Image (cartoon, rainbow, N blue to C red):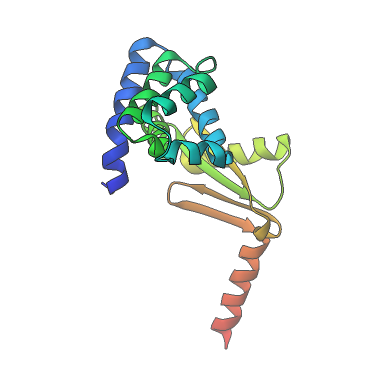
Amino acid sequence: MPLLNTITTPYADAFLQVCDANGDTDAVITQAKEMLALWHTSSDLREAMASPVLEVEGKKAALAKIFGETISPSFLNLLRLLADRQRIGFLDAVLERLLELYREQNQIALATVRSATELSEEQQALIAEKAKAVAGTDKVEVSLVVDPSLIGGFVLSVGSRVIDASLSGQVRRLGLALANVS
């Protein structure tokens, strides 16, 4: 188990158990995804929580003020606990681990789709069906990422399986084929 997982797993596992006991797991999972998106886009929030200048009580008060009305009480308790234990800087890793444990518990496969441009609803539906076929299950969570370096097309990853239907992938394969001909 990687070192970061030894720190994050106990928090994520205990939090998931609390959510299961409270019956609000699905709502908390949605809140966790929203919190992760905010954490990744707000450098001010990350810097404030990592700051040694801001005392633990100040961090807890800020978290309660910012998120108190939008997240469940158990989620707010997790944030306070992480602040108390000087682990709030690991919030993103704890939430990522929480989502992993939730997917494992519910046998949901994670499919990551990197595309050169934003996909339409129809394209997303078609790729989701392909992801279900690759995963071998109807329970698939699709994560969409725009990556202009692909030039065109998409790359679908489900576990260790990868389908590269990108233009940059085709160019790379063509270059390898040409190199092997010589």
